Length: 294
Image (cartoon, rainbow, N blue to C red; front, side, top):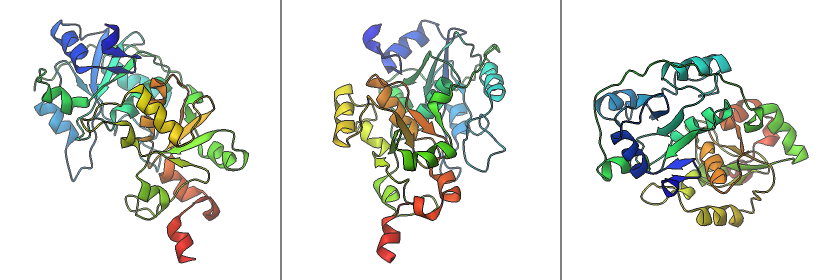
């Protein structure tokens, strides 16, 4: 089994397909489709109803979040997360495999992976290559929606894996940890709008667009390639590291990539640029566009 379970953070389609066909999906193994798309483009829940991996349940990131926050997809409370995943049949002893149907191969699944880890769950993996490659490789799909038996999940937030606005502000002066921003280069530099927001970045942040870690086929690159990407950007994986993006989603690709290299404590700035843009003082928003205008 070892070659098919890569650092346990990734599982191959072959491994999962064998588990599905052997009837192992149940209390000890749950599969979650964590897809999300802009509503005007695709309907993730409807696509799940039409086709998904047999035995999978839909992990709705719109429901499993802090719905009182003005920012997208902020972590829910411990009790909210525990209740939600418990209804999906996940207990503290369940091996959870997450995937999504994005055309890149993987987009939202690492966010779900990180959420489970942030709430203390260790046995969670991302399906390497996502649903796109699952289908391409000819593995089974179904429209049959399963009804998992509810389970009890006890959540305990691991604050090591989370950064707040206050911690990020303090770090601008103290530089106690490195910051990697996973957004596209234009949004990082401030030369293009970030989903309607003026863009730019946190002072001192390094830009590694999240898709840098994916192959053309949508699989995670090799550990050696990932290590080289971090080295080229002078990111030291032996030192503290936090990741940020637009709304705390693609930053989780940074955490996953570092995890595969043996660094398991990358923190996510949950509010990311959505919060930083609205709360940080102007001098803490670095933008080439502003500099050029000046």
